[in-house]
Length: 147
Image 1 (cartoon, rainbow, N blue to C red):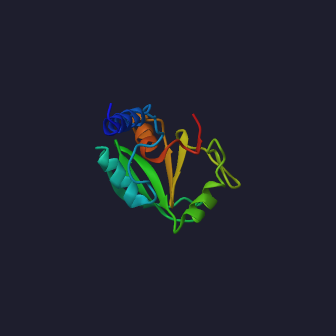
Image 2: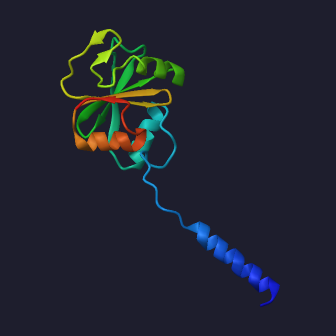
Image 3: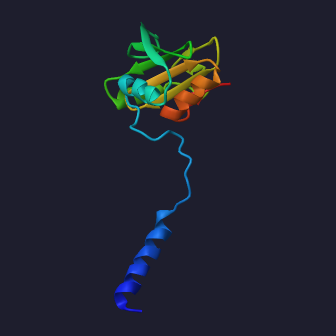
């Protein structure tokens, strides 16, 4: 076999061997990272999830005012911080089960789920599978939650 043909065959075999890889199961859907309120709603819309901003919301245990995001007829609270460090600082005060923030012991009307993405801290109080799946697909698993 002439050297050129052998080299071409070797390159083709090498390519086909590296072209296939096992599919991965990412915890967050592919696309730009969610880091603020704008990117959150943009990612949800890209997944054909109807979502719209409503009223501002103030929680005394967070250092910023948030907005209510209406999804599937329910409200999700999204708090945008000036930077990721500030968001992580407030997030660090939340217990793993979400029932305590700082020194405040809380009683929610449903199970709390807290998500963090860049400058964004998201709180969903409830158990609707459609909302939980949507939030997890764009923000990953909650860092604090109870069920």
